[in-house]
Each structure stands twice: as C-alpha cells, then as structure tokens.
Amino acid sequence: MLTQGGESLDQRGWLHLLTYTFNIYRASESYSHSELYGHLWSLSVEEQFYLIWPFVIYFYSRGLKSLIVSLLSFYLVAKLLLMLLVSWGALDRDFVVTQLYFQTFSQADAFLYGSLVALIHKNGGQAPYKFCMSVVVAVTLFCVIGEVLAQQSLFSAMRLMSSPAMFDNNWGFGIGYTIVGFSSLALILYVLYSSSKLKAILFEGRFMVYTGKISYGLYIYHYPIIHLIERYGGEMSNSDRILGYGGGLALTYMISSVSYKYFESPILVRKSRYS
Image (cartoon, rainbow, N blue to C red):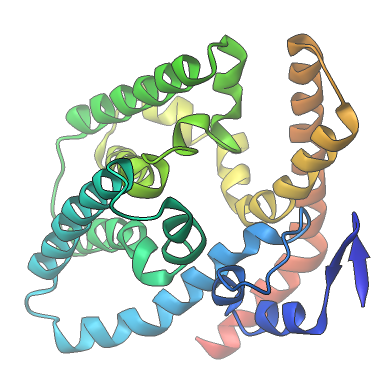
C-alpha cells in the first residue's frame, strides 16, 4: 500500500485507475480523497464516452447532427432543472455532488459539443466567428465577475482555472460547466473559421501550439502541484499567492514538457502501428 499525505492509494484504487472506471470508484462510499490522483476520474469519463460514441455514430449516422442538438438541448434543460431542485431543497445536494456529478451520462454534454464541432467541420460548414468570439468574451467576463462577487476579492479570479468558487454552489453541479462547454464550442469554431490577425497572435504562435501538445501533462500534474502550494503555503497574502501560483504554473509547465518528451512522445510515435 502506498501513502500520500496520510491518504492511502490501495489496490482497489489502482485497479480503477488502470481500467478507467475511477469515476465509479470516486462516487462510491469507500473512496478516500487524494490530492495526488483525485482528479483523474475525468479521464475515466472520457474513455467511457469514447467506447460508447462510435456505436451511436454507426446507428444514427444520417441524423447525427439533429441527435446531438437534441441531446444538448436536453442537457441544458435537465441541468437547469437539477440546479433548481437542489436550490429548492427537493433534491439532496450531496447526492448530486458525490453520485451524479462523476458519472459519464452527467458529463457527456461536454463531449457532445466537441462532436458537434467535428461534424460541422467535416461537412464543410461555416460559423459566424465574430459572434463566437463575442460569446467567449461574454462568458469569460461572466465567470470572472461571478468569481469576484462570490469571494469578494479580485484575487479570487485567479482561481478560475483550478476550483472556481462560483462552481462550488448549485450552479457548478447544474449548469455552470455547461456554460463553459458552450463557450469552448464557440472558441473552437472561432479558431477554425476566423482568418483574423488576432487568431494568429493568440492561437497560432509557437508557445500556444506547444502548450496544446503538452496539455495532457498539464492536466495530470497541475492538481497535485496546486494542492502542494496550498498545503505548505499556509496563510499567504494575495501577493504571495500570486507568486506561489505563478511558480506552480511554471513548475507544472516544466514537468509536463519533460513528460511529453520522454514519456508521451515515444508512445505517440508507436500509435501509427494501431491506426
């Protein structure tokens, strides 16, 4: 048995990590939270969706776009209703957070947005990229302002990439991430179809392209590094926190770069044998 921060990573935990069923374990009563690997439940959701979605495409290939739009509309209404039921006390919030939130069917709308982008692009469709960028800006401002109002601190906006306070309440487990998913859809469409200089500056530079390459590692390593800073940082002032999170970001980037070069790249080179 391995231990991390007083928490155990037992044999059952390893089994679920290796079989991509960690989200199921994460929602079980036997789960003990870890700052090292607790966020990896989302990888299980991703892999489970990839196992199911090809069959959906096969059986609904002709009406796939209509199906995706219908499902996204369903998720929007369902998550709004979920948020309201929790707010009214008609549904237990702990049940939503510990049971529903970690299941693939609860998070599938994020992947459906990506599927819709792929379908639009494959069929040679177009998108109003200026409107898409306006959506991204509006959602970003909404998130930042909501974060500041929730925490009564300008510094709190820096938490948006880790644990947004505005998502700690009923919104987060209802429609909060659905809003972010829609914004991501708009951003991807903007990048695909815009030919503006702004897009080239923001998304086509070497730094941004390389960041995309190491993004898997950035996700894997950021969580333990953030908690390491918060655990040993103690009562830090806002300026100290800025330095701490900045240093954590730099450390995450360096570790992810090393991981990509020496671990991920050799594996990616071999994938052509199986494609």
